Image 1 (cartoon, rainbow, N blue to C red):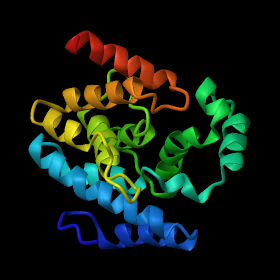
Image 2 (spheres, one colour):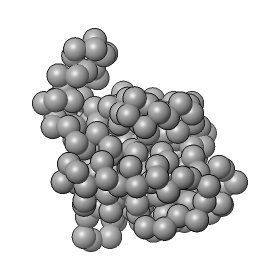
Image 3 (cartoon, rainbow, N blue to C red):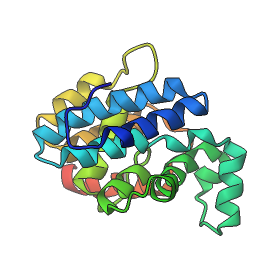
Image 4 (tube, rainbow, N blue to C red):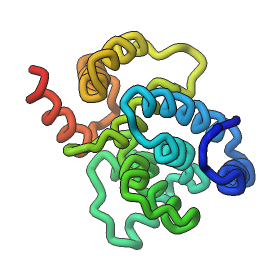
Length: 197
């Protein structure tokens, strides 16, 4: 991984070491791939590249926790837990990654924190940074085969980030690709549907 930008090498190394120390090399490879996609999207849509890189590298940092630990943390801190998070605790990882980015890596930039926090589900009134990390995470799919929606997103990105997000979420609903939709995803989809349908 080499990112030729203004991020301190020590910061990048600290992130890498955190994944490696917890035996999460595969996840580290994934977040680096997400960062590379996010760099291209940041250039395309004239966003701050450093913000997109940092959000991408930290979006799955909560992988160091088990799903039970994620749930226990959320309960201990009196989080409002979505029904989907109640049933599938791993969905909490996006919100926990925000907490870790803020507390362990001293990230205070709201563009970065918000993009981390909703990278799986998106949310209504999403920023372009939210959308970049959301879409980059879907393009840099961490499975062996190419995702079936890949070409759909590529074509939609020629139009806009919004249209790419809309097409991805619509694909998931149309093909029953969601275990249980988070209310943030449903709200984001409704907002996008009003624009495109």
